[in-house]
Length: 393
Ligand SMILES: Cc1cc2nc3c(=O)[nH]c(=O)nc-3n(C[C@H](O)[C@H](O)[C@H](O)COP(=O)(O)OP(=O)(O)OC[C@H]3O[C@@H](n4cnc5c(N)ncnc54)[C@H](O)[C@@H]3O)c2cc1C
Image 1 (tube, rainbow, N blue to C red):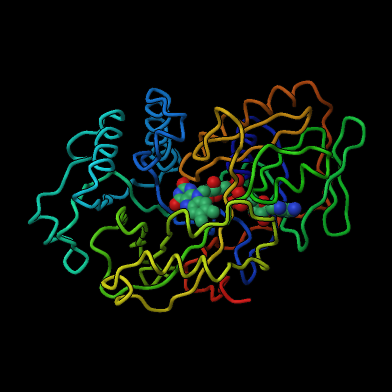
Image 2: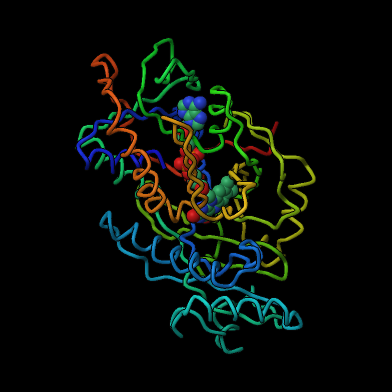
């Protein structure tokens, strides 16, 4: 989020400075700790929009456009890929819900359709369950690290600085400016964006602001599979898991990692913020995650470890957990995209709020003594370079 806003700010001739924690040994950003799933909106429950079908429709349509628009705008191809959802044949309620959502979004037959039984059996092989119906959905994995690298390059080329800190930045309010303390130094900022993911609530608290939201701890299983999954995104709604298999292979990613998430019972709904390196799960959440997984999936898994992701969940009426939550507090703006899929759209909205504040405020130049020092290749948590396991501890 911060990187996307910085890219926009530089296009408007501003020179922002972005502070972030270093990724050495472990990624310290939830963007680098998620499933890397470019979402189409079809899996979002209409209940999350207070049951309002029109709100769901607008939201899901803009999610679909926004994700694809993000890739296009930075010159990345849209992968020729899709997802498959399995639903138990006797679960007419869920089948009805999925069909209704597809109808509301207005997907074409290429984007959404029920698979014929033979087609499903051939495609899914060992994962095929004769008690389920299968649907093709226009959801696909995306290379989030590459998206971030492109946004970072754009921003740096045009004068942004990214500074990686050893310890979390702290902030305080001094009259109309915000004082930013990082690694023993201090600078002042006339307009400040807090887009620190799960760290945002702590930073807001330092300014005396309580945000109306919670953190949700969501475990992900990370591993390799042999053979690969029959679809890049495979959701078993009956068992309650979703699996994303990244198929782009390059020197960063010699294998084809799989990232698996479970249902609600695997998540801790009111988690306390803690630093990325201190994250861990309750034993029962891991059991729940494994309970969701069928033998044909676990049989093909190897190199398994776990990543604890923190989702920022708004408590406010009208703001859904899947979309941008942007709030202004004087010369400070807080922003969370909800989903990485909509990050660049969320950045446009956020930048709109920041611009009006910048126009009326004095400029505080960035001291030359602060180097721009975030230049190394960006890596997702599931890449082989990382070996951390948040389930230990
Ligand atoms: C388990 C999980 C799975 C998800 N799966 C998907 C998915 O498949 N598709 C999707 O679209 N969305 C997904 N999401 C949501 C998505 O990952 C987030 O909405 C998005 O990444 C948040 O981006 P952000 O920039 O707000 O936060 P982050 O990426 O967390 O960035 C915050 C930055 O702030 C820095 N920071 C924090 N505190 C401080 C501090 N005090 N000092 C200095 N720096 C600080 C961090 O180092 C980090 O660089 C998932 C989320 C989770 C948790």
